[in-house]
Amino acid sequence: MGKKVSKAGKGLLASYKSNNNFGKNKVRKLQSHLQKHPEDSIAATALATHSRSVAVSPRWGHKRVGHLNASQRLHDQTTSVVRAGENQLKYLVKHTNVVPEGNQFTSDELKAKAESAVAA
Image (tube, rainbow, N blue to C red):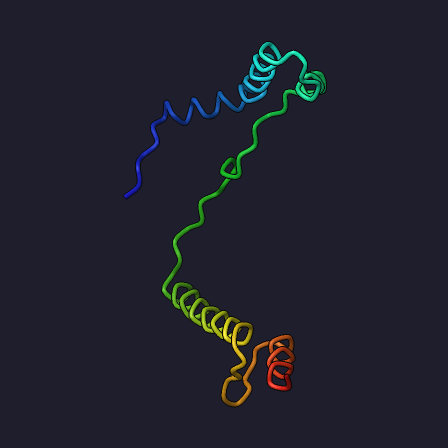
């Protein structure tokens, strides 16, 4: 069971984003760096051209997907097993000269690679 996020914690994240603390902190770090290293032209340029951009997170605006029903779970399991088998076949064809019985391939690319391995 995951941890529960408090309302105060959610509020802090919202205020961090809306007050643009990311941009302010970035400017502060650049200024501190320039005090220690005044000859750093790259940092000076970065500070001069910094637009105080807002932080971006892939989790912001994320909508939670509902639970899967039984048929969706079964479909996901089936496709993952098939995908795993295809990946194993790709690995075998790539790293060995063994061609599977019956030459059953899922893609023309694998088929061509196997035929060239047998011919070599």
